[in-house]
Length: 354
Image (cartoon, one colour):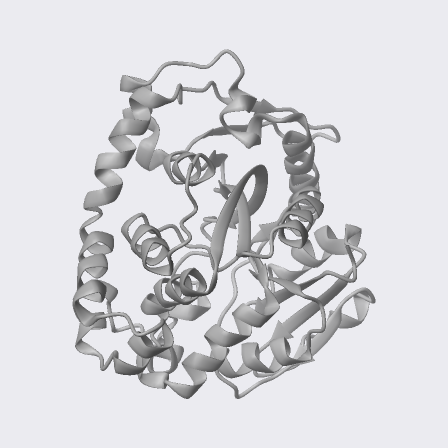
């Protein structure tokens, strides 16, 4: 696998997250690059001999990513933020899938969110994509589905070539870029190039801890306002940009089609209908996950994501085997979550100033 995949960890000014992330990836035998856009070099990097360090101050996010992607010689890349993780046990499964399915450009699994007191696992978004009967041969069908049922995939395991296409397009067309547009445009370009897969494996941890959320989130920091264009909002500002080059890049799609799927994404009309159907088609009500730890660490509880939990508990039934519905219940997933918590608790976060 080390010849197939490169992990890129991105950071900018916030370094308190890096020790735990880089310690976790000591178990990965392939290439790992820390792409640091901070104003000064990180003074602890010499402690991590398994990490390639690229310090690129005074460059935009798009510039940095294009530079690093041009340096990568593996067919696949996983770009992960400094506060998130891609689980090690899932990597061979996802790499093997892409090796055997050349029509797919990216692959992910189920996600969990890390909060200060517990973790929450993905429900509706994972279920609907993991159980697709048709991954759509027509690029228009793919683009329609993945905007109408939008679920951010920018931290999935992807083909390096396709990743580079996205960032190069953004560099060539800076008017299309804004931080609140990026994950949507990323998804459209990927869907125009190939199929997207979600496998029955726990793949990612996304942090929602207090010390990584605003005002500690670099992308939304006031100092980067002009670079990230954080004042632009997808719902009201995206269609006001000149989208001509994007429409061409996506295969010559029509502006009316873009307007339709923009509306679907913004009002979540498709999501709401299909999520309601999932409640009766699947048994989604699952018990809490209780993880105990040694060395005096307190236990941890995992529960369904907040935005769906009450609805699932009200309507859905409980399966006989929760691991058949949600990969987070599988033994290998729970073992990996335990490993993650051991690292996180040994390398706690602290507040930082930009």
